[in-house]
Image (cartoon, rainbow, N blue to C red; front, side):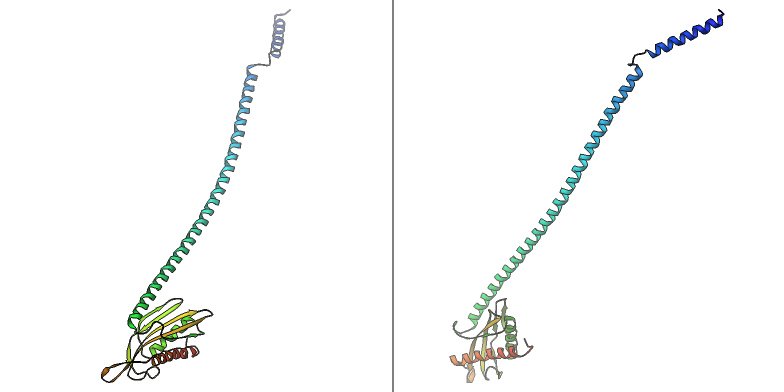
Length: 244
C-alpha cells in the first residue's frame, strides 16, 4: 500500500476516534457547570431585584400614607388654632365688656355720690315719668333741653341701660323753666325699660332768691312743679319729628 494512502487511512482513523471521544464526554463538563452557575446567579439576582422592587413599592405606599396623615394632621392643627384664636377673641371681648361694666358701675356710683353731695334733696323725692322712646333718643332730648335752658353739665354718664346727668347750679331767668331770680340745679336720671321705653327721673335743688341775695327755701310743690316742667320740655323735644 502506498505511503500516501496509508497516511490518509491513519488520519481518518484518528478523526473517527476523536469524534467518538468527543461525543462520549460526560454532561458535567466545565462549560456546562459554568452555565449552570451563571443561571443560578441570574436567578438569585432576579430574586433580589424582585425583593427590592417589592420593598420599593411598600416604601412608596408608606410614604403616600404618611404624607396623607401629615396633611390631615396639618389641617387639624389649623382648625384647632382657628378655634383657639376664636375662643381667645371671645374671652378678650368678654373681658373688655366686664371691664366696661365695672367702669360704668364705678362712674355711676361716683356720680351718685357726687349728686348726693351736690343736692339737698330727699332720696325719695323728685318726679318720674315713662315715655315711649328708646334710651338714646331720650338722652339726646334731655341734653338738648338742658343746653337750651342755659344749663351746663357737671357730670354726664351713659351706659347701655342708664344715663345720669348733674348740671351746674345757675342763676338766670329762662321763661321756659324758672321765674326770674330763681336758682336751680338738676339731677336727671334716665333708665331703659322693656318694649323700647324709658323712664325719666328729675330731682331739682331749687332755691328762691330774696332781696339782698337772701336764699329762700322753696316749697315742695314749687320744686315738684319745676321738675315736672323739665320733664314736659323733654317730652316736647321728643315730639318734634326728626329731632331725635
